[in-house]
Length: 152
Image 1 (cartoon, rainbow, N blue to C red):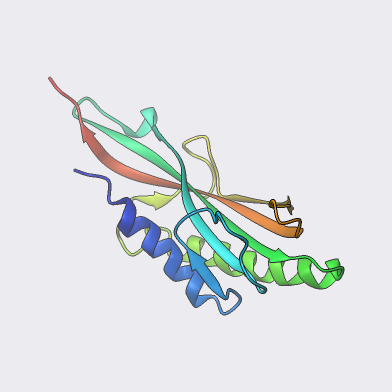
Image 2: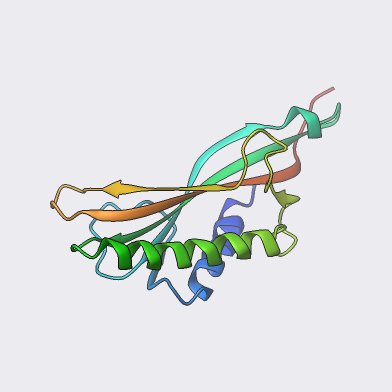
């Protein structure tokens, strides 16, 4: 079985686009400064094996995506934080409610069975143009059963 990373990323992007809070959705970490409003970016963070769910014939994998929400900060931090919190809440609810991403994967590892759980962290980002962004980055761990066949 091959990893369908484009299909997985597309499913994650679909949830972001449907949230109603996000103006732009990208399948990569932006290299240029996004315009105003909330931008969501989705990219691959890492892939590792999941020993507890693997067997003698195949290896189950954990695919961890980063989903970053970012919005320019122009002095109204209270409002910016409320906007980001609403968008993050919608996305985390969507990933919890559709935790197989339309039957593409075994599950989103909501509670960290694989060692990485669904979580989000707020912070700031200042690209080279000097604009300060308020960001909220979601760690989205996705379990893909029997991804790699093991040789006998």
